[in-house]
Image: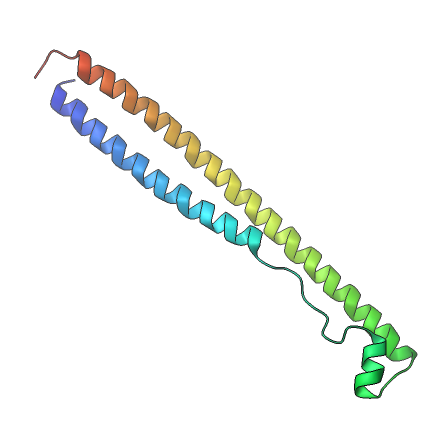
Length: 122
């Protein structure tokens, strides 16, 4: 392989590394956004005593409804957290895959550089 071909291959490899870096950066930002996304849904009515004092309604039904609604919100949070964890894991796996590809391209670049330095053809 002549120097011109080696340089062309180095330029192509360099561009591929830049593309991978951009993808890795974007995925890292996505992962950060996922992990910082708040999944808690606040229960506005607070509890059955709050309902009694603010809305002048009370009784066992409201106490049961309050407990049910609070449990429902806890389950929703758990479901959100599970979904976010699953997606975050997939994004992490993709980042690792791209980093492996980048490592391979960086090794290729080093080999091409050595080849360029040792080739005698102009």
